[in-house]
Image (cartoon, rainbow, N blue to C red; front, side):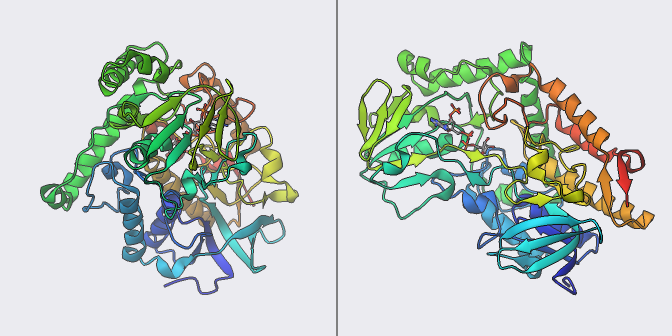
Length: 487
Ligand code: NA7
């Protein structure tokens, strides 16, 4: 069963990544079939559709990266590779009958709230207009690749790849490859490239803390056990609790932080096989947790290979032949890889206009903000998935997506109970919440380094400063009567 009229919908979901699919499954489960998912790519997957670089895999154990209501029994590794996750997502589409609700290869040009009808008007690139009562924006914060702002980047004569737009037809074997960036992505990509390239040079601006990855293959016995719902729940709960325990190590000056940093330091020593000079160059000068935790058993070790070089001098420019460093040295390359992250979007990849013609871009000029990362004052019936300040550096994003989806269902019920067309979070509710968030973030571990968590003005627009349980409880405890206005 699908929408009776696809241009006049109850719910429009933008983006078929993890959060878009979660919303769609929850709607189906609630017996609500009047919805459409619009996706600009050729397939579902979101970040897993985009990130196909060698070595791409999930950075939390896979049982925690599957939905509590849609467990997966066929994981082949604890830290599952990107194609496995994409397979899981495609399986969700099949099992939950989502295909008829999907419109792939379709981009949205703009979305605006129509004050007169109290509905969202969504304009597609094709010029087609869709109107919807509820607009769920699940475009993901990290969907737009960021190229580094380095002089001469476009002049490079060889292939230039961004990790999030990998071109597998570019040969790596036997080539001299350069990687700019040392974040989560580079930590997965570098060991793979080190195995294949004739020479690999990693250009590091800031080193990364690395913890051991407790990875293993899942065998036939594991897969049999995963078929038991009780076992699945237990394993998921175990990894959720373990991930939360890492969060304790993010408290500046705490004993837990000391233990976490000692674990990382010991790991680094072992990985670098006692090479003290290399250790000093790879040792971060900021506390662990400031960036998303990297778990890896082969990233640091890759630097001990004879064909891998680490450059820590600033890059002065890119030339047609390679990279020129600040000290004037030239590093000739055949292939240049930018693992330089993303322009953080939080729903800004599409122009969105709310009540009275206010644009989200203008409202967010000094940094994105939303009440509990999901609703924005002045933008009725707009629900953000993984909106501002709902990212974490230590656990699975699914633990934030699931309560967000439940919140949207609750909000829809509330609208129907009241017979209202729309609901809008109160401006003061949103602002007070954001003030509290920012106060908690001041002086926290997340202010101690540069990262995608922070906007250009230093404001941390990405991180949820508490534990996962607090987020779940706060979202479940939202008082519609006092925190929202209805129309
Ligand atoms: P990140 O974590 O944003 O990392 C980007 C890396 O690129 C980081 O090491 C940056 O150095 C480096 N970078 C960016 N611009 C430049 C320039 N101009 N010169 C040199 N180096 C540069 O992106 P990832 O893709 O690794 O991970 C994103 C998220 O995906 C991650 O948090 C996980 O949740 C999954 P910097 O540290 O800024 O000095």
